[in-house]
Image (cartoon, rainbow, N blue to C red; front, side, top):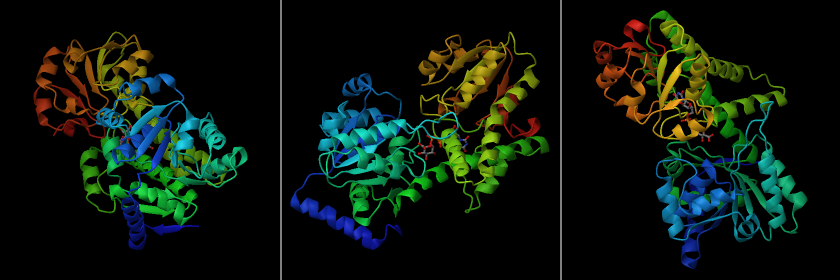
Length: 464
Ligand code: UGA
């Protein structure tokens, strides 16, 4: 079992190895990233940008063709430019051929989806498939790295699958190196992570990853594989629970005549608490927190541990949108025949991702109630249109607001913070502003004639 911090002694060792390589004039590492989703593509681009030779593999040939042509499968600030630059410099390659990629690689990252199964557990079929493919292609020593978010024990599973299927008689190692990047700031998070966690079976195996990450000069923690796997879930679920906690407090604030923005600020000044992830609102969505919370609950039950705290966080989150919707109907009455302007569809700003987006959940409730929805989002409309073609998608916030009986800001894009609310008021039929992300503070809006409803702020003091 390992369990030591990235000590000075260890850092010196890594630096020595890097210096040795430079003196020998050897090349940087050959890295293979399997899976070109959010994590895989960003990881591949950043490693290439650090000077490594990177091959990104995906079985989706259309995606690979698009990437070859410089077309990104997702919107992520800075990604397109980084991919194009490294591809043009021949450090970043795309292929559907797993076998040749594996044979040419030294470090193989598995970055494939691990979606929820019906029972809340993680579907590891893509991980299993890739592990089997690696085993069949392996022709020399490889370090296989689990980058996907996978339940504790998956490193061991991957090791067993490779051992069972490998045709090569030599050794290999399996490492857990969880990813902590956030959508919308993925490049920045990967270049400047708060920490890099390397769960490895031995010091020398950890060293390979350490060399790879050394140029970032960020804190590194070397652990055993299982601890690294749990660090990922514990971190995501802790943040999710924090959001549910502040949302629960928001409900109290609303009833008791307090303002959750002030309460969160007062809590956040305590250095033991800190200010981040205390934004009350519609709750957490996206492809990570909901899935990871379900998966950790499932894992806890598997080990006969009562996940009561996690279940509460889940339940609170499930109630956010229905609760807010009830508030809307209490203000607006019957929604049938009313027109609602919905600003924001993505699960958070700076992304086009609508997976488990709270804005989409709200959109569905609005449509089911018979309201006409005029929606606008800077990036997510094409994806939303595929699911809900009946919505009136607009080219601007002003177009969406035109003739509306109420306006809801469901995703806190910067563009919405700076819109001309006087102009909005003038084009709306009724100037009712629902602000469940609490992005508007100023008394200005009330003075302008808006009826304002925030989240966790009593109506009278909700506009300061
Ligand atoms: C999350 C983690 O923050 C990353 O560290 C992790 O790498 C990633 O999951 C993952 O596992 O891949 P992400 O889902 O991209 O990243 O987005 P976050 O910024 O964490 O937001 C998640 C959700 O929480 C969003 O719906 C957001 O609106 C909501 N949120 C966030 C709040 O409701 N309140 C807050 O104060 C903060």
